[in-house]
Image 1 (tube, one colour):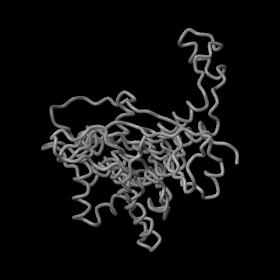
Image 2 (cartoon, helix red, strand yellow; image 1 turned 180 degrees about the vertical axis):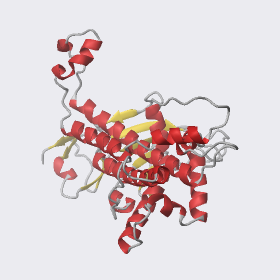
Image 3 (cartoon, one colour; image 1 turned 30 degrees about the horizontal axis):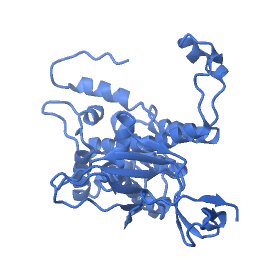
Length: 360
Protein backbone atom coordinates (compact mmCIF):
# COMPACT_ATOMS: atom_id res chain seq x y z
CA UNK A 1 0.00 0.00 0.00
CA UNK A 2 1.33 3.41 -0.97
CA UNK A 3 1.95 5.98 1.74
CA UNK A 4 1.90 9.28 -0.12
CA UNK A 5 1.84 12.48 1.86
CA UNK A 6 -0.29 15.27 0.31
CA UNK A 7 1.90 18.25 -0.51
CA UNK A 8 -0.39 20.76 -2.16
CA UNK A 9 -2.71 20.71 -5.18
CA UNK A 10 0.01 19.82 -7.70
CA UNK A 11 1.62 16.42 -8.22
CA UNK A 12 5.23 16.59 -7.10
CA UNK A 13 8.09 14.66 -8.77
CA UNK A 14 8.43 12.49 -5.67
CA UNK A 15 4.72 11.63 -5.70
CA UNK A 16 4.76 10.95 -9.45
CA UNK A 17 7.66 8.55 -9.03
CA UNK A 18 5.97 6.77 -6.14
CA UNK A 19 2.82 6.29 -8.20
CA UNK A 20 4.57 4.94 -11.29
CA UNK A 21 6.88 2.77 -9.17
CA UNK A 22 3.72 0.98 -8.07
CA UNK A 23 1.85 1.04 -11.40
CA UNK A 24 4.65 -0.43 -13.49
CA UNK A 25 4.96 -3.50 -11.26
CA UNK A 26 1.80 -4.86 -12.90
CA UNK A 27 1.89 -7.93 -15.18
CA UNK A 28 -0.78 -7.23 -17.81
CA UNK A 29 -0.19 -10.16 -20.16
CA UNK A 30 -0.42 -12.88 -17.46
CA UNK A 31 -3.58 -11.17 -16.20
CA UNK A 32 -5.32 -11.36 -19.56
CA UNK A 33 -3.89 -14.83 -20.23
CA UNK A 34 -5.35 -16.10 -16.96
CA UNK A 35 -8.78 -14.70 -17.82
CA UNK A 36 -8.67 -16.20 -21.30
CA UNK A 37 -7.69 -19.56 -19.84
CA UNK A 38 -10.50 -19.46 -17.27
CA UNK A 39 -13.10 -18.88 -20.01
CA UNK A 40 -11.70 -21.64 -22.22
CA UNK A 41 -11.69 -23.99 -19.25
CA UNK A 42 -15.29 -23.08 -18.37
CA UNK A 43 -16.35 -23.71 -21.97
CA UNK A 44 -14.68 -27.11 -21.99
CA UNK A 45 -16.23 -28.14 -18.67
CA UNK A 46 -19.53 -26.22 -18.41
CA UNK A 47 -21.20 -28.43 -15.78
CA UNK A 48 -21.97 -27.04 -12.33
CA UNK A 49 -19.07 -27.32 -9.85
CA UNK A 50 -18.88 -29.68 -6.92
CA UNK A 51 -20.10 -27.66 -3.90
CA UNK A 52 -17.37 -29.22 -1.74
CA UNK A 53 -14.84 -27.20 -3.73
CA UNK A 54 -16.31 -23.94 -2.41
CA UNK A 55 -16.81 -24.58 1.29
CA UNK A 56 -15.43 -21.16 2.28
CA UNK A 57 -17.97 -19.47 -0.02
CA UNK A 58 -20.86 -21.40 1.48
CA UNK A 59 -19.48 -20.76 4.94
CA UNK A 60 -19.45 -17.01 4.30
CA UNK A 61 -23.18 -17.28 3.55
CA UNK A 62 -23.78 -19.41 6.61
CA UNK A 63 -24.91 -22.34 4.47
CA UNK A 64 -23.80 -25.94 4.25
CA UNK A 65 -22.16 -26.89 0.95
CA UNK A 66 -25.05 -29.28 0.33
CA UNK A 67 -27.32 -26.29 -0.36
CA UNK A 68 -26.56 -26.46 -4.10
CA UNK A 69 -27.22 -22.74 -4.61
CA UNK A 70 -24.86 -22.59 -7.60
CA UNK A 71 -26.87 -24.90 -9.80
CA UNK A 72 -27.19 -23.97 -13.46
CA UNK A 73 -27.63 -25.66 -16.81
CA UNK A 74 -24.85 -26.21 -19.32
CA UNK A 75 -26.47 -23.67 -21.64
CA UNK A 76 -26.36 -21.03 -18.89
CA UNK A 77 -22.61 -21.52 -18.56
CA UNK A 78 -22.11 -21.29 -22.32
CA UNK A 79 -23.95 -17.98 -22.43
CA UNK A 80 -22.01 -16.63 -19.46
CA UNK A 81 -18.72 -17.52 -21.13
CA UNK A 82 -19.79 -15.83 -24.37
CA UNK A 83 -20.85 -12.61 -22.64
CA UNK A 84 -17.69 -12.53 -20.52
CA UNK A 85 -15.52 -13.14 -23.60
CA UNK A 86 -16.97 -10.06 -25.30
CA UNK A 87 -16.40 -8.03 -22.14
CA UNK A 88 -12.81 -9.29 -21.86
CA UNK A 89 -12.01 -8.38 -25.47
CA UNK A 90 -13.38 -4.90 -24.83
CA UNK A 91 -11.39 -4.62 -21.60
CA UNK A 92 -8.16 -5.43 -23.45
CA UNK A 93 -8.97 -2.99 -26.26
CA UNK A 94 -9.68 -0.12 -23.88
CA UNK A 95 -6.60 -0.90 -21.78
CA UNK A 96 -4.41 -0.71 -24.90
CA UNK A 97 -5.92 2.46 -26.34
CA UNK A 98 -5.98 4.38 -23.07
CA UNK A 99 -2.38 3.33 -22.32
CA UNK A 100 -1.19 4.40 -25.78
CA UNK A 101 -2.99 7.70 -25.33
CA UNK A 102 -1.23 8.20 -22.00
CA UNK A 103 2.29 7.59 -23.38
CA UNK A 104 1.92 9.35 -26.75
CA UNK A 105 -0.72 12.06 -26.38
CA UNK A 106 -1.43 13.01 -22.78
CA UNK A 107 0.02 16.16 -21.29
CA UNK A 108 0.22 16.75 -17.56
CA UNK A 109 -1.68 19.56 -15.95
CA UNK A 110 0.23 22.83 -15.50
CA UNK A 111 2.73 22.39 -12.69
CA UNK A 112 2.18 18.63 -12.30
CA UNK A 113 5.08 16.20 -12.54
CA UNK A 114 4.62 13.60 -15.31
CA UNK A 115 3.07 10.26 -14.32
CA UNK A 116 1.77 7.59 -16.69
CA UNK A 117 -0.67 6.28 -14.09
CA UNK A 118 -2.10 9.76 -13.57
CA UNK A 119 -2.25 10.35 -17.35
CA UNK A 120 -4.44 7.25 -17.72
CA UNK A 121 -6.61 8.16 -14.73
CA UNK A 122 -7.07 11.75 -15.95
CA UNK A 123 -7.55 10.82 -19.61
CA UNK A 124 -10.60 11.86 -21.65
CA UNK A 125 -13.78 10.24 -20.31
CA UNK A 126 -15.10 9.28 -23.75
CA UNK A 127 -13.43 6.66 -25.92
CA UNK A 128 -14.23 8.71 -29.03
CA UNK A 129 -12.00 11.52 -27.73
CA UNK A 130 -9.25 9.08 -26.72
CA UNK A 131 -9.25 7.44 -30.16
CA UNK A 132 -9.48 10.75 -32.05
CA UNK A 133 -6.54 12.29 -30.20
CA UNK A 134 -4.47 9.12 -30.53
CA UNK A 135 -5.07 8.95 -34.28
CA UNK A 136 -4.12 12.62 -34.70
CA UNK A 137 -0.76 12.03 -33.02
CA UNK A 138 0.08 8.75 -34.76
CA UNK A 139 -0.97 10.15 -38.16
CA UNK A 140 1.24 13.21 -37.72
CA UNK A 141 4.20 11.28 -36.27
CA UNK A 142 4.78 7.92 -37.95
CA UNK A 143 7.34 6.98 -35.30
CA UNK A 144 5.11 7.63 -32.27
CA UNK A 145 3.68 4.11 -32.07
CA UNK A 146 7.01 2.53 -33.08
CA UNK A 147 8.76 4.09 -30.08
CA UNK A 148 5.88 3.11 -27.78
CA UNK A 149 5.84 -0.51 -29.01
CA UNK A 150 9.39 -1.55 -30.00
CA UNK A 151 11.85 -1.68 -27.13
CA UNK A 152 15.24 -0.08 -27.37
CA UNK A 153 17.90 -2.37 -28.81
CA UNK A 154 15.60 -4.31 -31.14
CA UNK A 155 17.02 -4.25 -34.65
CA UNK A 156 14.86 -2.86 -37.45
CA UNK A 157 14.67 -6.13 -39.39
CA UNK A 158 12.08 -7.30 -41.90
CA UNK A 159 10.66 -9.64 -39.25
CA UNK A 160 10.31 -6.83 -36.71
CA UNK A 161 8.68 -4.58 -39.30
CA UNK A 162 6.19 -7.34 -40.11
CA UNK A 163 5.35 -7.73 -36.41
CA UNK A 164 4.98 -3.95 -36.16
CA UNK A 165 2.61 -3.87 -39.16
CA UNK A 166 0.53 -6.61 -37.52
CA UNK A 167 0.44 -4.61 -34.29
CA UNK A 168 -0.74 -1.50 -36.18
CA UNK A 169 -3.61 -3.57 -37.57
CA UNK A 170 -4.62 -4.68 -34.09
CA UNK A 171 -4.48 -1.14 -32.73
CA UNK A 172 -6.89 -0.18 -35.52
CA UNK A 173 -9.10 -3.14 -34.62
CA UNK A 174 -9.10 -2.11 -30.95
CA UNK A 175 -10.16 1.42 -31.92
CA UNK A 176 -12.88 0.00 -34.15
CA UNK A 177 -14.24 -2.13 -31.32
CA UNK A 178 -14.40 0.94 -29.08
CA UNK A 179 -15.76 3.53 -31.50
CA UNK A 180 -17.52 1.89 -34.47
CA UNK A 181 -21.02 3.33 -34.76
CA UNK A 182 -22.38 0.94 -37.37
CA UNK A 183 -22.52 -2.30 -35.37
CA UNK A 184 -22.19 -0.31 -32.08
CA UNK A 185 -20.03 -2.95 -30.39
CA UNK A 186 -19.07 -0.50 -27.65
CA UNK A 187 -22.77 -0.17 -26.84
CA UNK A 188 -22.91 -3.95 -26.37
CA UNK A 189 -20.19 -3.72 -23.75
CA UNK A 190 -21.95 -0.85 -22.03
CA UNK A 191 -25.22 -2.77 -21.93
CA UNK A 192 -23.41 -5.70 -20.31
CA UNK A 193 -21.69 -3.40 -17.85
CA UNK A 194 -24.64 -1.19 -16.98
CA UNK A 195 -27.43 -3.40 -15.73
CA UNK A 196 -26.91 -6.43 -17.98
CA UNK A 197 -29.43 -4.91 -20.42
CA UNK A 198 -28.99 -7.62 -23.02
CA UNK A 199 -30.60 -10.77 -24.36
CA UNK A 200 -28.19 -13.69 -24.62
CA UNK A 201 -29.34 -16.73 -26.59
CA UNK A 202 -27.76 -20.00 -27.66
CA UNK A 203 -30.90 -21.60 -29.10
CA UNK A 204 -31.21 -19.53 -32.30
CA UNK A 205 -30.06 -20.68 -35.72
CA UNK A 206 -30.68 -18.75 -38.92
CA UNK A 207 -29.82 -20.26 -42.31
CA UNK A 208 -30.45 -19.22 -45.89
CA UNK A 209 -31.79 -22.31 -47.66
CA UNK A 210 -30.71 -22.91 -51.23
CA UNK A 211 -33.37 -25.53 -51.85
CA UNK A 212 -37.12 -25.86 -51.51
CA UNK A 213 -39.33 -24.39 -48.76
CA UNK A 214 -41.00 -26.64 -46.20
CA UNK A 215 -43.17 -29.47 -47.49
CA UNK A 216 -46.96 -29.21 -47.46
CA UNK A 217 -47.06 -31.52 -44.46
CA UNK A 218 -45.08 -28.96 -42.43
CA UNK A 219 -41.74 -30.77 -42.49
CA UNK A 220 -38.36 -29.93 -43.92
CA UNK A 221 -35.65 -32.58 -44.44
CA UNK A 222 -32.45 -32.37 -42.42
CA UNK A 223 -30.54 -32.68 -45.68
CA UNK A 224 -31.70 -29.15 -46.53
CA UNK A 225 -29.17 -27.92 -43.96
CA UNK A 226 -26.34 -30.25 -45.01
CA UNK A 227 -23.79 -30.62 -47.80
CA UNK A 228 -23.86 -26.97 -48.76
CA UNK A 229 -27.63 -26.84 -49.19
CA UNK A 230 -27.87 -23.94 -46.76
CA UNK A 231 -25.79 -20.93 -45.74
CA UNK A 232 -25.57 -20.70 -41.94
CA UNK A 233 -25.80 -17.13 -40.69
CA UNK A 234 -26.31 -17.40 -36.94
CA UNK A 235 -25.21 -20.75 -35.53
CA UNK A 236 -23.38 -19.69 -32.36
CA UNK A 237 -24.31 -17.90 -29.12
CA UNK A 238 -25.86 -14.52 -29.85
CA UNK A 239 -26.00 -11.35 -27.79
CA UNK A 240 -28.70 -8.79 -28.61
CA UNK A 241 -28.97 -5.25 -27.25
CA UNK A 242 -30.72 -1.92 -27.82
CA UNK A 243 -28.85 1.27 -28.62
CA UNK A 244 -29.27 4.73 -30.09
CA UNK A 245 -26.25 5.41 -32.34
CA UNK A 246 -24.20 8.58 -32.08
CA UNK A 247 -23.83 11.01 -34.93
CA UNK A 248 -26.07 13.41 -36.79
CA UNK A 249 -28.82 13.38 -37.82
CA UNK A 250 -29.96 11.41 -34.81
CA UNK A 251 -31.24 7.90 -35.41
CA UNK A 252 -33.93 6.11 -33.48
CA UNK A 253 -33.66 2.98 -31.39
CA UNK A 254 -31.93 0.01 -33.01
CA UNK A 255 -31.59 -3.62 -32.00
CA UNK A 256 -28.32 -5.35 -32.81
CA UNK A 257 -27.41 -9.02 -32.49
CA UNK A 258 -23.75 -10.00 -32.24
CA UNK A 259 -22.61 -13.53 -32.99
CA UNK A 260 -20.02 -14.75 -30.49
CA UNK A 261 -17.42 -17.11 -31.93
CA UNK A 262 -15.61 -17.79 -28.66
CA UNK A 263 -12.21 -18.98 -29.98
CA UNK A 264 -12.02 -16.00 -32.35
CA UNK A 265 -13.07 -13.45 -29.72
CA UNK A 266 -10.50 -14.77 -27.25
CA UNK A 267 -7.81 -14.93 -29.95
CA UNK A 268 -8.50 -11.25 -30.67
CA UNK A 269 -8.17 -10.55 -26.96
CA UNK A 270 -4.80 -12.29 -26.86
CA UNK A 271 -3.43 -10.35 -29.84
CA UNK A 272 -4.52 -7.01 -28.35
CA UNK A 273 -3.16 -7.96 -24.92
CA UNK A 274 0.27 -8.82 -26.35
CA UNK A 275 0.53 -5.35 -27.90
CA UNK A 276 -0.56 -3.76 -24.63
CA UNK A 277 2.05 -5.79 -22.73
CA UNK A 278 4.79 -4.74 -25.15
CA UNK A 279 3.93 -1.05 -24.79
CA UNK A 280 3.66 -1.47 -21.02
CA UNK A 281 7.15 -3.02 -20.87
CA UNK A 282 8.67 -0.22 -22.97
CA UNK A 283 7.20 2.47 -20.70
CA UNK A 284 8.10 0.56 -17.52
CA UNK A 285 11.68 0.14 -18.69
CA UNK A 286 11.91 3.86 -19.44
CA UNK A 287 10.62 4.57 -15.93
CA UNK A 288 12.86 2.18 -13.96
CA UNK A 289 15.86 2.14 -16.27
CA UNK A 290 16.36 -1.58 -15.63
CA UNK A 291 14.27 -4.63 -16.52
CA UNK A 292 14.78 -6.57 -13.31
CA UNK A 293 11.53 -5.66 -11.58
CA UNK A 294 9.13 -5.51 -14.53
CA UNK A 295 7.18 -7.99 -16.62
CA UNK A 296 9.25 -9.21 -19.59
CA UNK A 297 8.83 -7.97 -23.12
CA UNK A 298 6.47 -10.43 -24.84
CA UNK A 299 7.23 -12.46 -27.93
CA UNK A 300 5.92 -10.45 -30.87
CA UNK A 301 3.60 -12.06 -33.41
CA UNK A 302 3.74 -11.57 -37.17
CA UNK A 303 0.18 -12.80 -37.38
CA UNK A 304 -2.60 -13.36 -37.58
CA UNK A 305 -3.75 -9.95 -38.68
CA UNK A 306 -7.35 -8.98 -37.92
CA UNK A 307 -8.26 -9.71 -41.52
CA UNK A 308 -6.71 -13.17 -41.38
CA UNK A 309 -8.35 -14.04 -38.06
CA UNK A 310 -11.85 -12.74 -38.82
CA UNK A 311 -11.96 -13.87 -42.45
CA UNK A 312 -15.47 -13.54 -43.88
CA UNK A 313 -17.34 -14.55 -40.73
CA UNK A 314 -20.67 -12.96 -39.88
CA UNK A 315 -20.28 -10.38 -37.12
CA UNK A 316 -23.88 -9.40 -36.46
CA UNK A 317 -27.26 -8.10 -37.60
CA UNK A 318 -28.74 -4.62 -37.10
CA UNK A 319 -32.43 -3.67 -37.38
CA UNK A 320 -34.50 -0.54 -36.77
CA UNK A 321 -36.92 -0.39 -33.83
CA UNK A 322 -38.04 3.26 -34.02
CA UNK A 323 -37.59 5.84 -36.74
CA UNK A 324 -35.39 8.95 -36.24
CA UNK A 325 -36.88 11.60 -33.92
CA UNK A 326 -36.90 14.41 -36.51
CA UNK A 327 -39.65 12.63 -38.44
CA UNK A 328 -37.97 13.02 -41.84
CA UNK A 329 -34.59 11.29 -41.72
CA UNK A 330 -34.79 7.71 -42.99
CA UNK A 331 -33.64 5.01 -40.59
CA UNK A 332 -30.39 3.22 -41.26
CA UNK A 333 -30.92 0.09 -43.35
CA UNK A 334 -31.20 -3.25 -41.60
CA UNK A 335 -28.72 -5.88 -42.56
CA UNK A 336 -25.78 -8.18 -41.91
CA UNK A 337 -22.25 -7.15 -40.99
CA UNK A 338 -19.17 -9.01 -42.18
CA UNK A 339 -15.59 -7.72 -41.69
CA UNK A 340 -15.50 -4.56 -43.78
CA UNK A 341 -18.77 -5.40 -45.55
CA UNK A 342 -22.42 -4.51 -44.89
CA UNK A 343 -25.16 -6.48 -46.66
CA UNK A 344 -28.56 -4.87 -46.54
CA UNK A 345 -31.21 -7.43 -45.58
CA UNK A 346 -34.40 -7.52 -43.58
CA UNK A 347 -35.24 -10.61 -41.56
CA UNK A 348 -39.04 -10.78 -41.47
CA UNK A 349 -39.97 -12.22 -38.10
CA UNK A 350 -43.70 -11.52 -38.60
CA UNK A 351 -44.47 -13.73 -41.59
CA UNK A 352 -43.26 -16.99 -40.09
CA UNK A 353 -43.84 -20.45 -41.46
CA UNK A 354 -43.39 -23.20 -38.89
CA UNK A 355 -41.88 -26.52 -39.89
CA UNK A 356 -40.44 -29.59 -38.24
CA UNK A 357 -36.99 -30.77 -39.32
CA UNK A 358 -37.06 -34.48 -40.08
CA UNK A 359 -34.30 -36.90 -40.94
CA UNK A 360 -34.09 -37.19 -44.66
